[in-house]
Image (cartoon, rainbow, N blue to C red):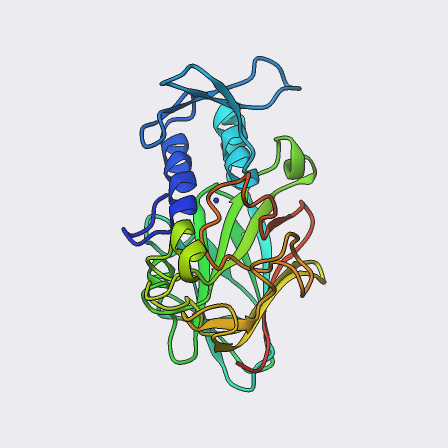
Length: 296
């Protein structure tokens, strides 16, 4: 919800490697890194599962983004590309420059519309303005990122450039869950340092792993309902890597509200140890809304 550079955080790297394999072969696919085979259901009421090639164990797919792409991989008819609406709101007193990049490190399939001024690899959004865009629902892992001087060249370099990452997967209508009512988009905020791992977070909140991937505050939501908010100032409230201090609580056993998890501070690769994941989706018919508030 494709691979990233070698500094990719552990959990998301494993998930996205499997997704990349699925998208490359839309039937039963071997995810070599994990020795997992995708097992497609024989009827419409069942869900895809994984089979461990080493033990023959059948494993449920619990990650919602991975499950979404698995469903599409098992149903080639879902691959028809359609578009989903995106609204980007700039509440700052100066213009911002936004880019959209897919996991192949290319500018993503976005059409910049009203309120968006095409600039370089992205778009300029004036102070106080709203940019309306559409994104092709192609199932690829993708990212939005922003800067104050020019559009970032590649949002998959955001960790190295200390830029707030808005991670997305736009998926088409036709599958269970959010797909029943139209195209949907999975989304999350990530501020994970380049070399941070679950083990290093547990040890010392990822000290000396590259610094938080944070440069601008952002909120994410659907059609006027905000799910996640991440804002500074960046300091040592949540460890030495200069994480934003008003970005939820990464230690909380809940997600979405201000006192709960609102962004990925570390990979959260292990689902049993990280039951609550700060990712969500906009259902079909809802507008995925990215807001850049004023402040740090």
